[in-house]
Image (cartoon, rainbow, N blue to C red):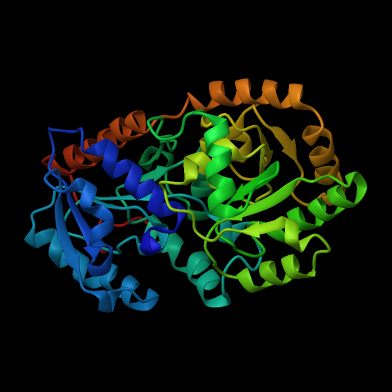
Length: 386
């Protein structure tokens, strides 16, 4: 479910695994598609890797694997707890307690977020799977409220555990060297706005940001550039078309997926980070940007208001004129950007993957201990709440 390492869930899985490697009290097994094994080289000697055949990569085969093969593997390996970090793959049944991470329930909020078949699956099937999980990790208070509202999971089975920030990677660093690297590698040789998100339309709202950037350039005649960092996803063609139609297309850079090694320097080199997403269950990029000392303009949709606190300039993600005005004001106000950098560093310090891992282990232990009680019955087809 990590989509070859190019998704938000991938970053969650990688970061959580790195933090769990410090845990010496438990053993961990990762189920990994064959071509993704190289992405988990960092856990060698710390966790067991179990290979999943590539024939299970396609979406339908993937779901079928989670609903059939996985339960048998869990029984064969005598797992105490199974953690599935994706709501679409939550297993209907299993021989051991089940923990699932729900990152967001965007299909209940954003029209045309996915294809109609996937939207139908999320709305009709996911609630029936969620109620059968022993524990659910919600990565924000906002997501926890959605789990209660849309999936009807009892609150005692939902634990809010915020995502973290890897502060060994994301820290202010030296801006001048970062700018030099980004000028060489990405052609970003002028001040620039940065948006890190996969190119997904309409949910990530790239086209609105392009419209605001067009207004900003027209009204200011500024040399600032706009950079998008993220791989193509649903609706990416519409985003590329909007870039091509912009009178300032030469000043808009679509960088594609940016490898982890370059991402911190991209944040450090950016003069402003802009995150106009229509909905997020958490939203790691704004916090990563803050941790690198980059001032942030962000939507407060979904969990974003909870995550960014008062450290970012908040925007209405559907108000082009207001965003254009903020781009103009902040690009011309270095002192204000410095204030935002300081506030962002303080806010980012609240999030740490070590704390996230420790709380996740508590959820594992809670699920395992409950299953070990003499009068406990695993949630099964016969006893699951309906």
